[in-house]
Length: 400
Image (cartoon, rainbow, N blue to C red; front, side):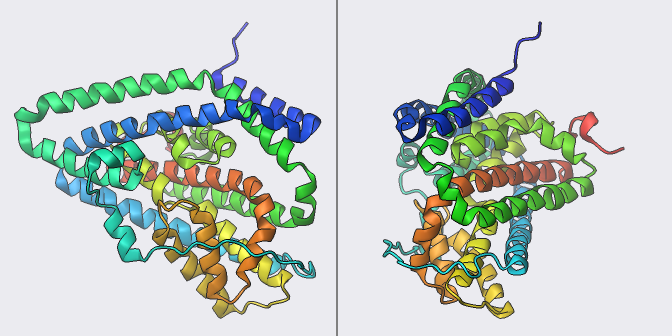
């Protein structure tokens, strides 16, 4: 008799978590530390995995290839981000979600200001790389790893021991990822049980239509946008999605692209994407790619505007799109960036920012889907860069 795979055990834990949360209720929160342990274990892997794999990848790449990879990655995220915003705005606009809801009793919410874009860009450069590694500042780690990899390449044979050491670290981290995954069913069970038990089904009822439309928008982004892009690359979409399914599943459970990164790197390399490409594109995406968040921002703004009895013009919706794109860049790596982004976008068209308090209750439910979308986008981006750089993916995934 075949033993269940790790993914099958995780799925069992997921389903049991739903049942346990719905049955036990808020008191299920007592087991949340088991889920916190799982997230901390995943995050424990991120820094050494990113630094070792990215440094080795850059050190073995030519300057021209590195420049092309950077350009392709940013262009891909920009294009898919625009598609995500359009999907969110069109669905929310056509459905008129929130109309007639009559929000009342608006509470004050504590607002944070996003730092200026110039400061965000300066903050990418670490003044102390050891501090960046210790604090897990992903953008600073990426910046330092790229420069460190270039320096290793320029140093030639003198730096071979450093490269060999980092290659050994990378291989060790891949093995450690596999070990941590054995704990995954318990972690997923506790996280899902806590989510269902503490939030309950009652919080969903007033916002059920918004949640449904948001998940519909995510599905369109996944299958129409990403599926279409994969077909352009001569990749079978469902084969590809099947190969990487662990990553969005983990993202859905943990609500963290960064925590899911070790799993994403493992499954993406399983499709044939090189370690060099995966180690560059995926950490970058986990830090700045927010397609799922773009859909969320667009829909929430239209929803709150309709609920407050406001009518957004086409011009105002265009402002929402532009502001959301700029906000996603300006708040990259900032704690609480989702709230900051929504505050900025609401303010750009005059929708009361206090309305954030009304969607806060369902944020976790929305966060699960938007994080999964972000992770799939990162994976497709890695495949795009790999194919356009002449890498050969698994033959069974390719359209002949």
